[in-house]
Image (cartoon, rainbow, N blue to C red; front, side, top):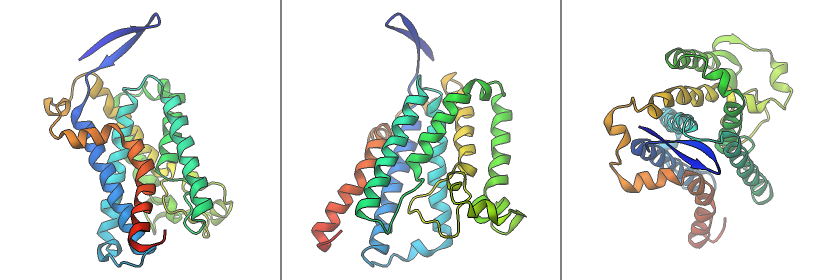
Length: 259
């Protein structure tokens, strides 16, 4: 359902809120918080958490992160100023980078989820007219193929996984400055890392799917709120992400006497 409102003489489209989308986003951000707390306990305070070393745990982590990116892509179809949102998100990401560089230089964050989201929103804002010329089903299918094709770039391969596909030249990775794209040098280190390749295609697939959401073509449950706490968390994901680490550090300081 779509209606319009007039702000300063300009007609602005308003869409029906998707409660389920808020809930999924809220669930994903809470999972990220739990993951980061477990990570800190394991690597900073030497409290062994066995599941963090299981291969399936990395897969689950990427699924939740991917779901968050997908929903964020859908949300971009609701936004009237993705460029502004992207700049704000990237700016906050850079603040976090500088804070960690100062207080925790051994645990840098160079291109984390906020940097990724910010750049993705800006790219979408610049290219939305071109992206929207492609029919949604075709766009989703192309994004799925490109995701699989570029998923191995972080590991040195053009293909779906490490050791599968075409091995890429080492000089691309040794350049050192292409890590936002996924070409990370052997010495590269970032405690939170989501490069544009392959993850931008997840974001973009969400943007194509968002077409059906704003046109009221999703199932009825999509527009209903089933769990208010999750929906509330989903509306404040940026603040939760920004504040959860300082809160966790204070909590750890009280328990362990150090950060």
